[in-house]
Length: 197
Image 1 (cartoon, helix red, strand yellow):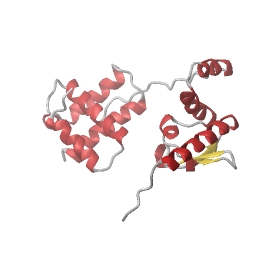
Image 2 (cartoon, helix red, strand yellow):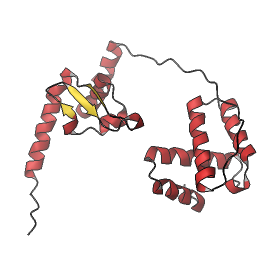
Image 3 (tube, helix red, strand yellow):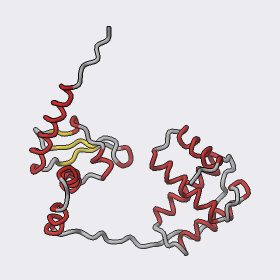
Image 4 (cartoon, one colour):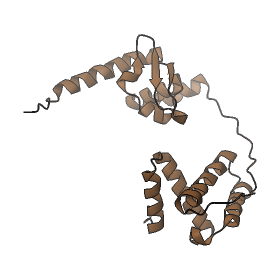
């Protein structure tokens, strides 16, 4: 789907302000949904009341979670307050009251069955997530310097909320991780050094 000049301009402004890519995608998604909900009317032609109607619709008809509704509100607040310079007034919308779902916890046997279907690389990634309590993005951003084999620890930099933390490095994975480090060192040795004249 081709972006409209308006959405392209909004995306440019979000990037100019240095927002995270996930935030950018989320804001663009909710602004697009807001526009489509109001039959493709331009946001400058819409009012606080239209924002209230949309947010209440999300809570009542779509039954989204309170956090999702908050993200939609943040996207529209950015659109009007920062991008269009048309500050929103106080909006008395219906807050979402969806009760939190209790997570389903897999048994050890179920986890073992899942791991049996994974290839070596995916098994290592899932093993790190499962054994260290890492989020997907945290796991995929790990670097060799983040592994502390002496203390069986992993340092996670810039995790959720921009915070860093230390977590456990599962004993069962240290052998595979050592092998990866050795392979990486071999590859680096094979790359010719660029020497400035």
